[in-house]
Length: 505
Image (cartoon, rainbow, N blue to C red):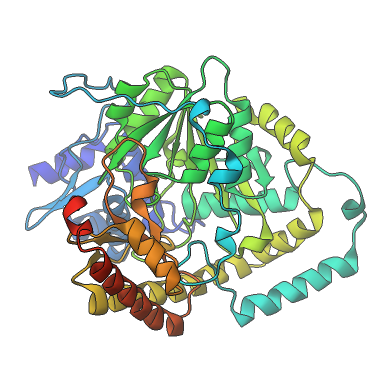
């Protein structure tokens, strides 16, 4: 009893009944605040969900949901038969990075002169290929399609005067407010509508960010492996790119400090790292924020595909932890709805807002007000949330169908696990098979796979296939896996020596 009472004395909950904020979220937010402020220290044992619910007079389900969210985001850890504890590896709020490594980290930097001619590097037709298992495919069901038609017709019938002139380069107030409300509720983003800037998608947001980065230096961190278009955009803009290795906890912040301690920015995908799919651990998140505050650097959080999490509630954003306004948060509706929409958004810290809006204005003046009006109505009337719920079920089924087919037909050649989030999965090659050779042979059989080894810069590459499952109907998945299996069989027969030359994963 003494330990329980001493824990209760550490933090006093303020439960507001009848609030718009659900009870489980009130518990989660207050526990998270206590952990981050060190009122609950690392290693502290939390009471059981039954004890907490009894102490506060709430349903046990609320305590269970709060604990599950904290566990999913890395604030706590469970010990079998012992209980729930505050994660012991959370760093101090502003901690210096440890420098006592046994082996020095090799520093690699890519400069603009190393960039191949863009026309030779970027295949602008690849994303339009609808064959399985290309990335970025989406589905629109009959319900969303009909609603879109009705809202579009309603918008065109009204044709308000605002559609005939120039408007705010940040986007319409209605859409920015709808996006702000959504991000606060679904992603725990801290923002006001005035900080939202509507873009054509994450790629345009990244391009604008590159243009307004401070001129003190052009050094940036990128994930290794990572998203190639971000890297190429940075190189094209003259930045010096430092590839930072990614492990099971996400980007290695300590390696980044070793490589480029005074970099002006880092570009990360913390909720679902591309392509590996790992989640940036809570310890790394706090470490990254501490580095950015100390070095006056910027963190660009690319939260692509954050809507599609299949196990539990969506993870909170990195931006929501930021007390120093060092995080630029970017997202897109093109994956949540459909790529042809061409609407994304950025949440800009106040210090950069004027520069970002000016660059947005110089680039193409403003986004289409007609498209924004349709999207704003779609979100305000609750259709967007309903669409996401339906697509989440469909994409989860497509994921499960693909995983089952790969394990059934290619278990000897590929290792695959179902990801908790996102629109693609990674299948690691067994027996030293070359992912580049599989890509080439797969295309000959009508299957699109991306070799993960090409996404590495300095880290030792792993041979694996990046396969998109979203937007590919279940009826096409099994035949496509069968064709992929034939492609691997053909490769194995034609290039038997490849297994000896490529290291095992």
